[in-house]
Image (cartoon, rainbow, N blue to C red; front, top):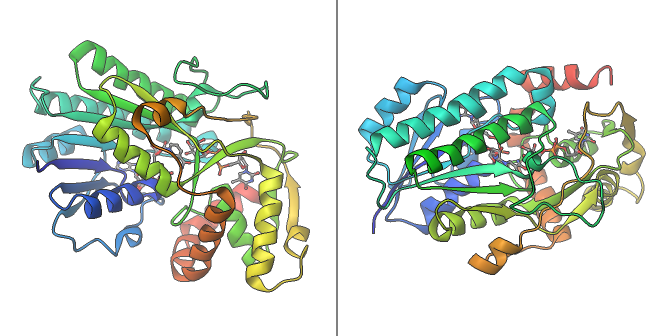
Length: 352
Ligand code: NAD
Ligand code: DAU
């Protein structure tokens, strides 16, 4: 059956992989990508599918309710996959209000518009909200994992704004019967990752012989998942997840930041023909992130057991593919690291 799907934030890192998967895997679907094109949104992420007959890009802002109403009036959407967000924790510390506006107000606008445009006839409709494991807070006992029933305990302005948006999505399901589904995923990595985030920032700095800024002692732990595996999970949950349910997504792949940076240094030494240990000399410990969450670790058994999803790549393989992608896409990297981003980088790291 043909479907019309609105994907928000489709020009960003994860959104662009979700758009590509849906446009290529479901030629009978119409995919509309709505994105404001903030510093993180980049249409160069989608050049390979931009002319596909089942793909349309619309530039717009989810904080603008009347724009959304017009968009839903023009397109009879069957479903929404909502990824648009401010996504970087460090930016949320310096400018929390931008996160309240897009992540909270924008999400409520989208929920309202979907509810009103579907006029309470929700048959065949679905509102899928893409969220993060950071809403669960920080783990301190090494045996603990985040499950779907872990109480929310967000610690940064970013995670607080995502937690608020998750609560609104569930409230719309409970109060109005909006057919919602949610997922909370761990740290993604892969092609098109914006270089303000740990892995692409380190790749870029190793390549350009700049210091590798490790926050605090580098002891914080993150659970890494290849972005295409996240996109596959979103496809699975959008089509087969139960209405009203939440699914945790993760790779059972925990790394201390410092170990991960050393691994990247080794891979980069090989790729760049440097002798082993050269890039690791660039490692520099810097002032810790304020309120830095110690450890995230997702228990993804519900998604694996109930819907049959599993990660497709081992981490070392995924990391090598990622390094290869960045080395082969210098122009992409140069475009996003020049101008406004360079100013952000200088202000974030100069006095650290
Ligand atoms: P990103 O920052 O790379 O992309 C966000 C996109 O949203 C950009 O294209 C941006 O232009 C767009 N956008 C921002 N504000 C908008 C607005 N007001 N209106 C319309 N578009 C707007 O983010 P990402 O890393 O791809 O994350 C996508 C989603 O997945 C987010 O909701 C994030 O919370 C969630 N998530 C991310 C990760 C991760 O590791 N990156 C992990 C779990 C969940
Ligand atoms: O867990 C999912 C979340 O992962 C997503 O919801 C967020 O959108 C995404 O940005 C990511 O958040 P993190 O804060 O974990 O990612 P980041 O890449 O910013 O940092 C990863 C770890 O590396 C974290 O412990 C902080 C540390 N770090 C980061 C940067 C940018 C450094 O040590 N040095 C750095 O320069």
